[in-house]
Image 1 (tube, rainbow, N blue to C red):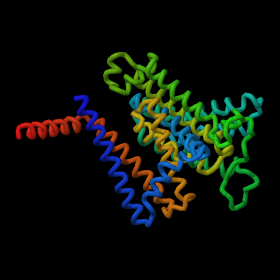
Image 2 (cartoon, rainbow, N blue to C red):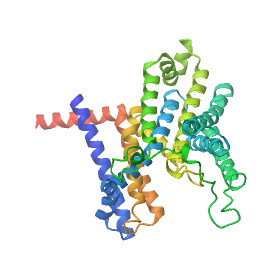
Image 3 (tube, rainbow, N blue to C red):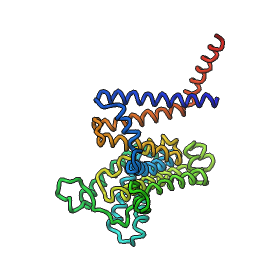
Image 4 (cartoon, helix red, strand yellow):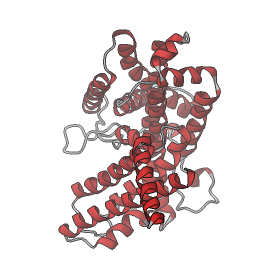
Length: 370
């Protein structure tokens, strides 16, 4: 049984890779791009220099934090697809705090991160409460809260928080640059002896700590066990005396706090000011990362790295003069993600594996009989 499972898993992965490469090659051929050059840029170019690898790690950082937050919600029985809105509200409150508070420099960065977490937690708590108290579908509420958060942030960016230097001009709306005391330093700024190419910021360490802390909380504490029990079977959990509604809200608070932290880390580590598209869509990509990571906080880490490599490689196609339109880059990236997730679902489906095993055994018996 174990041997067949390994063969089955390897076969599904191999077929998925071949399918992805085949469809992507067909698309690239139609577009007139060199297939081998394109694949080299996507999968190999991110590893050709420390600068490129730093870019990958900077993308990996918010993906990891968001993915961990999504894991908490899913494991607790609530589907959080509002990570984007929670990121936006977290970074918005963090920006307001950083711009208008007057705290000593040593406390500026940690307090700003804390405010971002609180903003995301509050925005996540609202759909959690609606689900727990009124039975409102979290699929509907989280999507609507995404729109509300995005529009609120857009208004703040264009009116009360707009940088006076771009007011009335044709430039994209943005806030003034945050004080340097609140920034997350790059690694070569913390350790000057390191190579200059190591430009990723310290947020990656925050991401790894969050992943480990959530794992310990969810798998090593009574509260985490009750949250996972509520997610596995709410009826059984209620029968055991577990308050499912309370843990649903708690799960959304933790999930929203992670997403808000991810948005704040992106602002303090990369942009250093509020911009129009500073979330990078990580609130949505983090859902796929969480699924690909097996809905496990530690599994999210390699999954986020893999998707960061693909994202950075696709963004580098234009730099390397690969004639692929920018919108087709999203198509290629989405194709890879779709096939990977589909393969994972097929591998995790015991019914499909059982059917494959029966056919394999029947074929083996026929060969032996012949």
